[in-house]
Length: 460
Image (cartoon, rainbow, N blue to C red; front, side):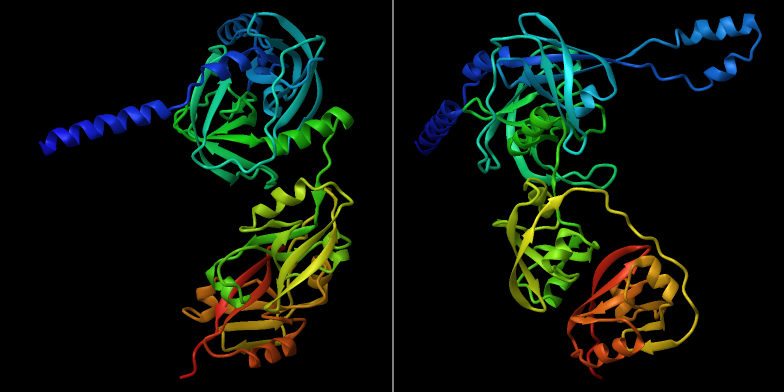
């Protein structure tokens, strides 16, 4: 009797779950006419060693040219995209059309149009195309709302040349940080388990309302195919970038002018934070918006422009979307207290990074943290743009400094709330420390600023 009741219950639960599964057919029917396949040609890349072939006798040169094929054959690439205006503006990825000499857009009804690249933005991996057409079907970008992890999403594209394929899945995570090769990080990617493969790049990712919540951009794979880790550029970034490309042909981002790092448990304790959060300012650029606003190295940014900063990667995501010239409030933790600072956001520009110079072997001193220090010479300070500091010559094994990760060659510029310009400053700062206290140390390592947390030893 009980087994029969249990079996019926399981069947009813299964039927109920099946009834709740989404029906993607209306979205596919309505959206597919606005999705496009993009065919790209670019200049051929030379074959390694081809120059040496020219030096061979003619009969040998003909043999190698036959085996290697024509050297001027154009490279071909393909991707996906979607129409955002009836007069022919189309969104895709930058990497799909990068260095293109010819771009052709193919619709689902097999019409083809030559496309002009209006503008590209490598930082977000987005590009805007234009075809000479009117009355095209279009797609709408979703409102800038918080898409939730677990929501159903749908992708349409041309993976491996299989035109207008449909795949579905859920949002696995949001706000993923995937820095570029140059270390830039301006896109809070949506992670999904939707099957995305080569050829899907630039295609739309839909929610159940049929609005575009993202542009498929990257996959993580060991095989070259989908393993359930795909990443899309969220609609709020797409809207901002495409509007600027359409109006100006280029993208200008908000810029703060700071180097930042993550706050771990020990640093959180040293900065009087209840838990690890925020973006720790390791360095403030000269004449930057941050310096003009009064932000300091050692400040932990907890909120910026009303947006919470949970991790350091959140800050460039937020700042990059703010129009240059906008005044916003930054909530920071400074010397154990919260402080609100008004900041006028600047425009993104190149940020030079100084390199470490040599140091003078003089004025050595030891301290209870297990460090052998010396005063930093003026040439090193000028090279790094520092007002002063002390150089770490040696780190005692198993000492508090060694456990914190301090290394020889580091230049210490701050200990706790005290600026360190010379050995006397360091000695005075050490005297103010309490046994067992976790204290933040700001240092310069190979030209880059870094904060580490050091645990002061207990009294014997």
